Picture 1 (tube, rainbow, N blue to C red):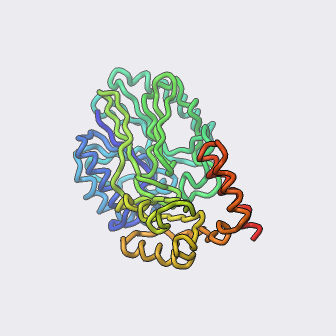
Picture 2: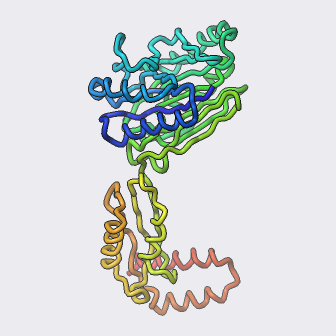
Picture 3: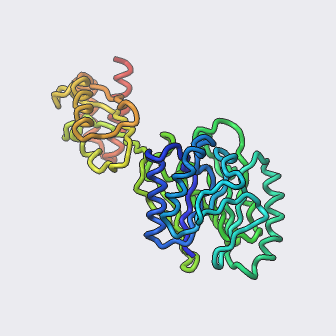
Length: 361
């Protein structure tokens, strides 16, 4: 059995980056000859968007032979009403007590509800007996759940723009000895996370397959599972994402500041929207580049390379040419050069003095 697992696509329109990300998920599932695609909640951003897209999503899901298994999340918990049709190969989990068996694998789906952790735990205890009775027809058991994991210290922003509050919270210990082989979770946006639960279960957050907020930094992923090979792989998706690049300028660098910045941007992914932060120090007396000129050079570079910016460039660098030519710094730097200490330690000491002198001046 081959499975692609994803969640938190938050569809709004059929012509935007989120829609294209879902198409990429389907293309990857076809390429890997997957039997199942699992979507653990928040396929849609809200009920109104789902109403608008239901016909188009039908056509999109028709482009794969894989079964598409979906549970409602907190954003689309009211979307999947009885009688609504999302495609011949689409299965919506509406009842936790009714699993779906695909070949040798049994899939259970716990639809999102405003439940406490204790309420979720009680439901899982009931699931243990159901899994035991279903062992004769399936040797692998999966649970789709849209949940907040309490074991790690996650920020509210890691779950998107949810604000405060708990969202069907669980702990990894809740799943011990239940009989599950895989917990296919959704709700955690930031990155992919695969955790082992004793004795032989895996808790998997795929992260959002497309950046929803600016907190989802870096190339997005889905998780590929091959039950026969016993493989669980994180697979990068060619989808829209935010990329953050932090550049610290060193006034002792022989490279011109703009060349240092250009080199850092050379391998920027074409699907990325950039958050660029330039800090550190420049020596205008040495490079001939003032603070204002460098600002102009950065914006010209962004325009020439047609770089998509998520926000205005953060330019926090300072011209310290006057400090580097000061006798106090010159004497310090000369004595530092005579010391037999690690070059990195010397560099740190120079930067500390520069910072101290900029605050004084």
